Image 1 (cartoon, one colour):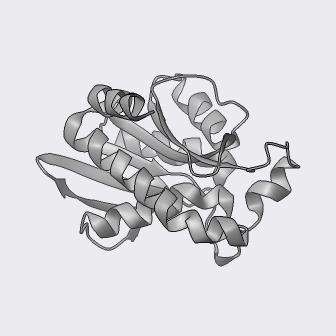
Image 2: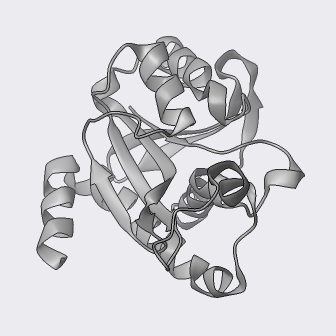
Image 3: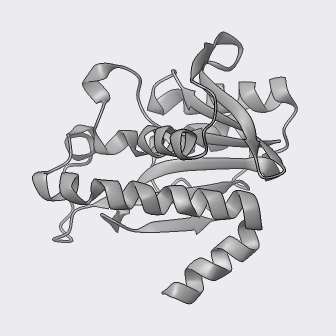
Length: 191
């Protein structure tokens, strides 16, 4: 079983904000993969959808712990469903990449991302796959972090959001059907 976690913050005030990119991607992935409706699972501190893609059973999780405590939900899900970290995939916003960029990473530090930092702390390892979805400003300037990530998308970003989410969903699909190594190789070949 693969555990795919989308990072974000629960609550309507955070919907359509840059920091909820993980939730947006997982919602689209569940829809395009025709997975069951989301339901709350208190044991894992979030909403889940579980189904089969190809021959692979997948469990999608949107933590309700808020971004900075995402590690609690991820650790609970891995433990409860007995999933190794090698089968853990985290979808999150990445301010270090320009808006529209999607990258696969197999390990590394949190890079200042509080959700990833919480997961690394809870699991005691950096060895899990990340799907990093670029939300950084197009002008390359460094914004005030908390207000930038918690704001809604600009008009220009909103117009390009569907394509960005679609690209991230396609990346997830390739990871599930082809494996991380081949999906990463295909991504690197296209660049």
